[in-house]
Image (cartoon, rainbow, N blue to C red; front, side, top):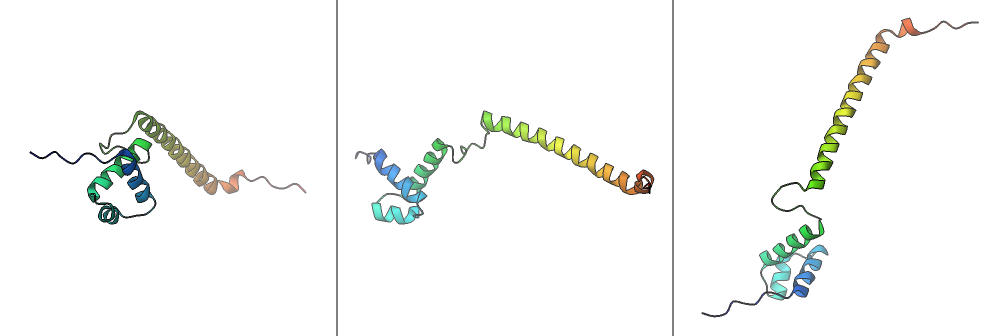
Length: 106
């Protein structure tokens, strides 16, 4: 049985990732350098995940993202409550505006 093709060198993979980030299409790079476009896409995905640019494919949130989500939801509830209070106060003052104004003294 023939030996499988050895893996591409790390420097080559990094160069492909940089070229894709610079705007080159993986299909064009695959033709030019003799590798497969899906390999290039895989290297880009792995590099982005490692650098934190893209979350892992599992869809699970990291601990920091989970904590941020909890904090943002808490802040959203607080802002919605404040908005509702201000809307009620605005309506109350609009209906009772003539009763709360003081006559001017001349």
